Length: 377
Ligand SMILES: [Ca+2]
Image (cartoon, rainbow, N blue to C red; front, top):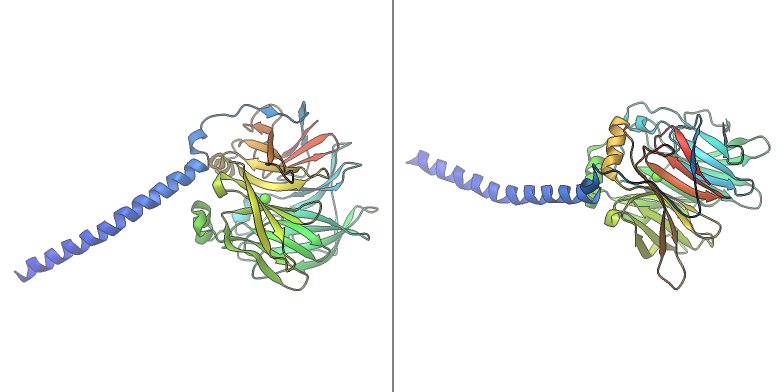
């Protein structure tokens, strides 16, 4: 009799556990399916037709040493010169990260050359970069990744155009630099940077945050030359990625790669550096880096199918690319143009476009991993 009571208790207890576990599992599975669907599950096997608008007629591939030129920043529009940040980014998840470099692209000659770093002898694996100018100098801010377990840092250089050299100024490190992605220099010793995740890359919590953005704790940090603070608290973003300052320096633009399936978010900068969101433009694509043209148009490289992007990371198969141009008129709704869209495998094409910018009569598109740039004119 005693034994039967025990069995009944165990059955009731396991019944209660099942009552809790089954709904939680169903909610988790539904959340993952919803997430995968917003990342491109419904169009995973379909291929995208190539689209080129905005007055551009044709594109050509530019091959160089700058493989994996994830970010690009304009040095000058006339002559058209661009800094490239290139590195073997697949090594970011290996215990020992592989070095990359900073390059200069001359769009007139289509020449790409490595820029020597003076005064910085450590390994560099650059990610987001940003140009800041004052009367005296051109500064280049660089997000630098190091081996897994070693925190990210920001390097500041001054560019010597006569000698084509980057002169190292300082390395900024802070415990709030958790999983840095992109940077926007806003003073010679001031910047905003995105943490695309609230946990270091390679950790389980980082992967969980990618799958379930409510747990990503993504943020934007601000360094004022002395200290770092969260300008947008952890959890303000699903995945804060690209960041750029408006031409009038009053607004900060941040791409949130997975918010509402991909959004451009617009913030006012408060006097203490904190960010106050004014509005957002939903782009329904995995938006990456941002470039602001002198005419105030905002150019964004994007990954329209994040599942195919992940597959591209794993097996090198082509991944689609997409470029948006966004105009934000002061008293009218935003205007969005899809300037480029492709499957990644056409004759003159590029996989996984992370940066797009308009310079002179060219559209430059750069990739996360691919071995070439795409220049359209
Ligand atoms: Ca990025």
